[in-house]
Image (cartoon, rainbow, N blue to C red; front, top):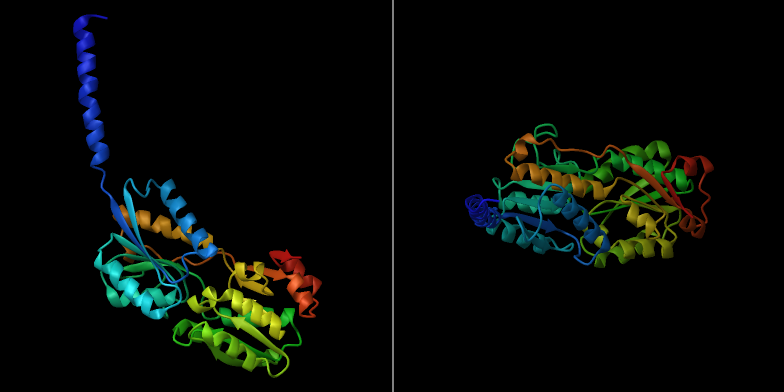
Length: 329
C-alpha cells in the first residue's frame, strides 16, 4: 500500500471515530412515567413490567441508553395514587403509562395535555377517559379489559360451576364507577338464573374479611370478585377467606385461579403490557394518543381449578371442563 493512501485511510478512520462517539452521546434520552396501583414486590406486577420493558427493547428503547423510566408504585391506596400522579406530571415525562381505572382518573385530574397510555382499564368511554374507542380524542389512549356487561357473564359462569348458589355478592370498589356497573350488570342477569345479587363494597383490605364473613352467615352464597386495585392487591386474602367460608367465587384474572381460586374468566394481561409498550413507541416517534384507537382483548379465557372445586364439594360438569381453556387439577 502506498504511504499516501495509508495515511489517508488512517486519517479518515480517526475522523470517523469521534463522529460515531458524538452520535452515540447525542442520542436523546426520552422519559417515561409509570403509575402502578399495585405492590412493587407482587410477582404479577413484576411480570407485567418485564413484558413491558422487553417489548420496548425489541422496539429499540433501553433504560440507561435512550430511555429513563420513573416509577410510582401506589399499592391500593387512593391517596398515594393521587400523589404519584401529581409527582409524575411534575417531572414532565414524554409519556405516562398507567394501570387500572382509579390511577387513570387521578392522572386525568392532574393533566389534560401530557400523553397517557393505559392498560387493564374497564369501560374507558363510560368512565369518561376517552371520547370513543376508535377515536379517543384527547391525551389518553390504551388497552381496555372489560365492558360492564361482563358482570352478567361472570354470574352465568359461576352458576354453571356452582348450581346450588342462590345468593351472590359482588366484591367491588364502590368508588370505582365501572365496578358499580359490573354490579348492575350482574343484577340485570340474575333473575333468569334464580339468583339474588348483593353489593359487597370494600374500600380497603381491612374490609374484606368482615364483609365476606357477614355475607356467608346465610347459606348458598357465592362471590364475583371485580377487578380493582384493592381486590388485586389482597387476592390471597380473598381466596383464603372464600375457601374458609365455603363460598364459590369467580375472578377476573387467571392468577387468582392459579393461586387457589375456583374459576376465572378474563384475558391475557401480559399481552396488554406489551401493547402499551408498542403505543409508547409510537407516541415517542410522533404519533398522538388521540389518533391511536383503544384496543380491547380479542379473546377471553375460562380457567377452572378442580382441586378447589372438590374442596368446596362441587362437581364441575364435564361439558364445562371441556369448554374451559385450562383446567387445574
